[in-house]
Length: 217
Image (cartoon, rainbow, N blue to C red):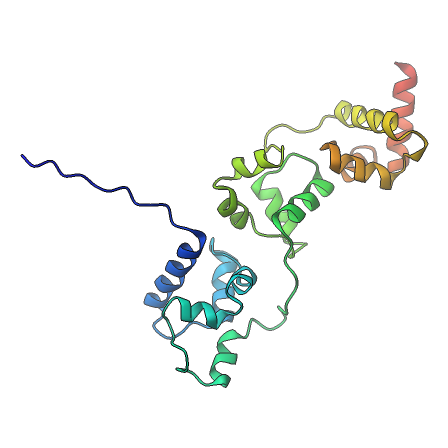
């Protein structure tokens, strides 16, 4: 009896995944898809954001050409402009890198990073890359967090916050202010300034509580 073997499917590159995505969408929408239409889909589905595609391929219509949806010279300049036009009110806004997006989250909420809370924060700061983009970069959310020495489990206790403040005070001395602490906390993956304010109502109150707690100890 003949034994059949199946060759392993090689992993696709990001470029190949994007091309296949656009080709698949073209099968569903035979007419060349407009950038604005793709934007609507990407807002609800785990697709790369339009800005990311434009950065990689220079323009939406260049991507359509790469995917074989349109050919060079097939459309007039006016038609190309229509395809490239994003949704009204979504003018170009420079997208942050993954590193900048994660840093903003840590500064806002601390080092416990869940997909839901990250996505909620992104609703207020659209320059952050999507959680799907982060997952595409690192394979899984867990891998991404490990890359930045973060976790989606656990949470800083009040004692953790005070210990972080104590360590910062030891290192910064008279230079300890809310601003210097915020920078120090980012560098040391310590409880963020925002978290201290959430827990103790203000920076001043956090320092007062730390000093009283330290004195009692």
